[in-house]
Length: 359
Image 1 (cartoon, rainbow, N blue to C red):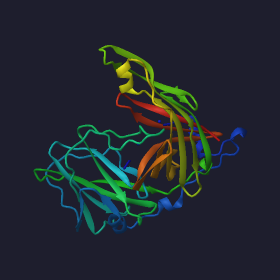
Image 2 (image 1 turned 180 degrees about the horizontal axis):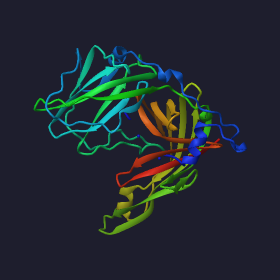
Image 3 (image 1 turned 60 degrees about the vertical axis):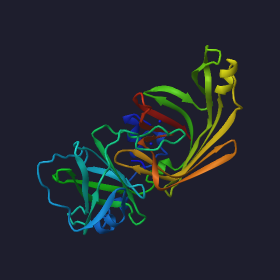
């Protein structure tokens, strides 16, 4: 899961969440909160509908805090998504052993059980499996001190609000004081101005246009030839994004199909002759289906993918994400065009990408 190029100008963000006085934006309607997101969910229903790897449900209340184990969270409110759930990320001591999580309602009524979650060590690897396609690099990388608990939902956890108490414990038996976090499970859909089909036009990186629809993008490589010489090939691996329409439906579902032509260097043939030799040009389609949610308060768009198909030269390969894959999470600005913005990490730097779409 989760909680994997992105968009924005503050002045334009206002246009996405309120009616504009400008005649050019007369088609923009006011976005109002979905009342189902304000419904207080039953803590026992939520606790029983949670899925946590390395987690065990235990009857009763979580153990009483002991010792002086420090623990805090950067945020005490967060969004969750149906099926896809949410993540809990925090810094932990070197002798961290696990966490206790107990669901409660906003009025303090706790569930009849708690979760004991043991995490087998730290990792600084990317927490999301990378996808191919336009949004493929949006991932969350943990540092050496961070722990991430991935919480998914069963079908019975609907849009609404609940809270949870979380404390951590170490290998010496110390238990931290609990921290309360409240979650708003987003309803699917939410912004009528997004509904319809949008066609991708370009992507910018830190404000600089990086590629446009129909433009060929190439990477270079150096071939170490069999005759002990080197050959630099500037257009070794080239691809052209031909089209990418994305459709947002009023029921909160989305679909998009990304069509790309590409040509790859035949490395072994080139190595033998020390002359650039290329494979036959190929076509690749990446299609994605899932649900979208719009956070009215933050002007944020989230795409949760449940099914994808990669087709190379007519040979399809389909994948199913039972609990959803967090494909994109970032700001969305809607006027007569659509700009979506997110933060990305390409292993060299973290940068901001904007994706531009027109009707």
